[in-house]
Amino acid sequence: MKEELLDAVLPEERRLRIAAQLRRDTRVRVEDLAARYGVSGETIRRDLQVLEERGILRRVYGGAVAQESRGWEPGADERAIARLDPKRAIAAAAAALVEPGETLVFDLGTTVAETARALPATFSGRALCVALPTAAELAGREGVEVHLAGGQVRRGDLACVGPGSEKFFERFFADRAFIAASGVHLKAGVTSDRLEEIPVRQAILGQAQAVYVLADGAKLGRVAVGRVCQLSAVTAIVTDSGADPEAVRALEQSGTRVIVAPTGSELD
Image 1: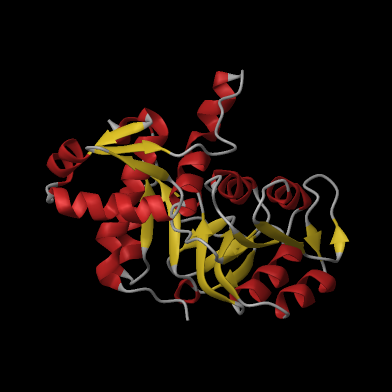
Image 2: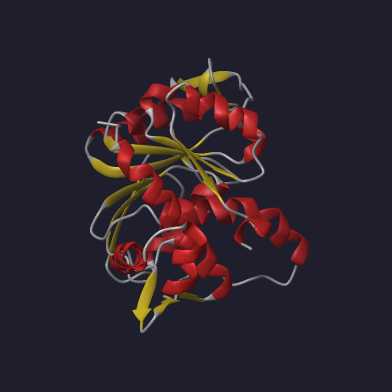
């Protein structure tokens, strides 16, 4: 259930970079993209069509412009924005994977919450949420049916934990799930610092066709106290370009798909 066609990896990586470039520049040209990626204009036009169908852009003569989206307006504190940049890059890459009409699972965690905010304004579908803030964010959107996991609401991040949350996810099947992690390790797999979160994530794993672990570069190679799952149980790891290239290479050589979201100078 967790596998995707390997021959779709390279085109998908290219589309993620195009989406990230649009987030920065708001407009792209077919001619420039074809030269940059060494592919034909027709290939780029197909990429733009796919991204338009996902609600990320609007095609115009000779290229495309960014579709208006929610949740990406810069705040006043530039230092806070700089710290958020890897998380937002990961979120943009994750959101670009979503197809219209899908049922999505959003775990707790700041990067997962950013992914929900990064969904195109035109997205319609179903969202199954672990945390109240994420549910509230998506509940304000027309065309999105939101379900909140039950159970105990934890103070601070307002996440739902406990047996009630686990049973909630047993009732649904989802197209894609986005989960958080404290560590991603070649041998230890996906791990978490907070043991009470693990059963909920394991329930999600069994109910989603594709599972993406959202982990910034600092978490690659790290082992936390509790195991969530082996790497073979997930579709891909989505990380940022600040990740150690050796750690990324080791994961890929083991058969784990890694999506590296471009940040900063990677977009230039």
